[in-house]
Image (cartoon, rainbow, N blue to C red; front, side, top):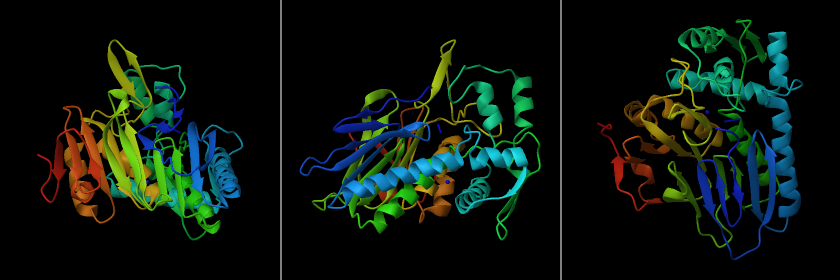
Length: 345
């Protein structure tokens, strides 16, 4: 709180990464690192005299967490926990388990880290893709459920009660990695930088000229087009959308964001959900959860938590919803429907 095939990032002056792209700063040459980790392309952009070693340290931190959290590496702690069914876990895995359980409860089950059997049934993330029948989905759903995770925070002991249960932190791990990388950069005295981890953006301070970072939110129907541009400082911007990973069959699109209740791609009426808040872990989890919820439920949830995050939603009927906290920061050529105290009708 690793996502149709791996989306391609154009790592140029304008970097397109899943849901967002950066309008680059041109006045000072940054130190950059481009690499592949956590099933996505990542880019680190830093400024300052210590930017070179800091960038290497931040990259190393993401690669460390990938080895720890991967659902596909047979030697990762996540996979080893699934094999043992019970174990005392590391501090990193403990944090993610606690956050995932909390987000699951807060979002009414919209966020769920146990959907791996269902995702694999559909062929996500890497194929071969398959449209399952109701019986197949029912069988896969029987292997899921956050209630089968017993967690003791004091001892950091995790027990998986369902023998078929498999954990996948793909909906939250990149956000957590961004926060851990930002902490490394803070220790290195980096005051200006930007982390692009797929659809996860972590802005560190301002640009060197003290102006805000300008983040454009990708239009779901136009690869090089955008819904609008956010001006942000020291915050996180995470987007989840139906255009990131999907396949098509019989003129229907099947995307990777699954509804835990149905075991099928969420048909909530939302095309993309962007979360803006201080903590990237929270933003990552909520971008998936709100996409699953749909506009009305998402607005009701925001009303209860509006001090914690803001959102931008683009829906199937081409409506662009923006919460009141982002209105001064978001510029768009499209018509904006503000979300304030009253709920979306």
